[in-house]
Length: 152
Image (cartoon, rainbow, N blue to C red):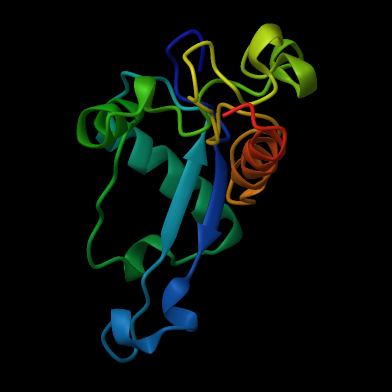
């Protein structure tokens, strides 16, 4: 990814929301969502889709033939459509220098930013991205603590 190349074996997270909500797809059909990580910022959308589908075919033969429609977003698309810097939904890689007391950077790991009463509660805060809600919960606790101490 850092060399601008598509991964040979992409990391794919597949969900099938229509298995629980029948209202989002026609009868006998399903909506499948694929979340692919570690993709170069500027990549060929068609090549990415092809690589991902070939990987899925290894585990689920016939999957590609069942597809009626594809809507794929590259990291560049995520930046353009949603304003997410470089399409990184986690606000930066979760590497060793960005964990625990060092996320987002050491002096601002307590959720309070250098601007008065500005707190960081998204993926850029500890413990990082995903759908856990933990950064927001931790940030709310930091705000409540400061309110109790009359520091806000």
